[in-house]
Amino acid sequence: MDTRRHCAIVAAPGGAMHISIFRAAAPILAAAIFLVLILVSGSAQADQRWTYEPPRNFQADEAANIRKAPDLGSEILGSVARGQTMQVTARMGDFYEVPLIMGGVGYIHRLYLTPLGLLTTPAPPQEQPETRWQAMAYSPRSGSLGSAFNQYTLENAWNAALNACGRQDCRVTVNSEGGCVSMSQGSGNTVGFGSGAEGSVAERAARQDCKDRGGRGCSNVRTVCQR
Image (cartoon, rainbow, N blue to C red; front, side):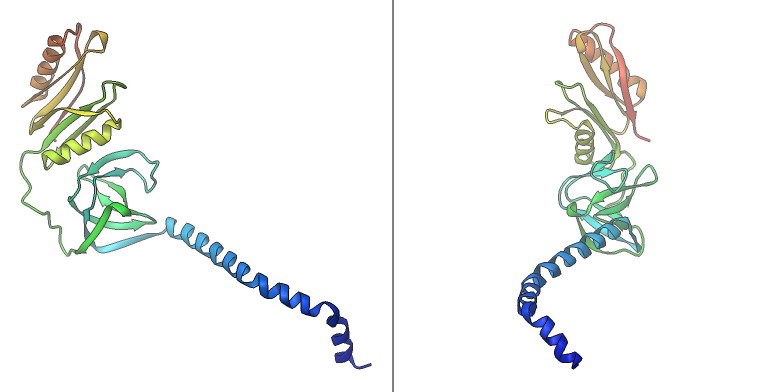
């Protein structure tokens, strides 16, 4: 028996239909494989860390949160103001790694930052002032309090305090160039705020502000100072 002819006879009845179905399904199959490859690649990239040596200089397009880990649900450590420049030491997935003033690193989502170029040495935009800004923001509805310290500009201190407060009705209540800021709370949820060259001066001013607003038994809740 002619084997080649036998195979052709067996395959002939449904051969055209099978080939037609395969040709129609090929683009869908290819697209599915491509999507799987993208997802696998994206997952792998999210766990990878690319180090910038030397660090790169970036600018914030908008005010953005600095997070503890490269995750939008991670704890907020602080914030950067629109137009602020900073060094980026690495990238992890969709987040840039930035060194923090108090030590360690934080993470900012890449959509908020634009690279400005390579740096060979740390180059702050201006000479750093000896005195820095502190601020507090407060939400009357929720009682949420946000504070910021060691910020180089008043705008940065306000943005950092508002971000730390985290509520829509948060408002900056006190700020200080150098020195300290403090919040006091008394009866009936009465609050007061104060500032001063030293912590004790700011706390005394906050207690007095609380009393002036009708509070009784006012005591200090939080005090932050330049470090």
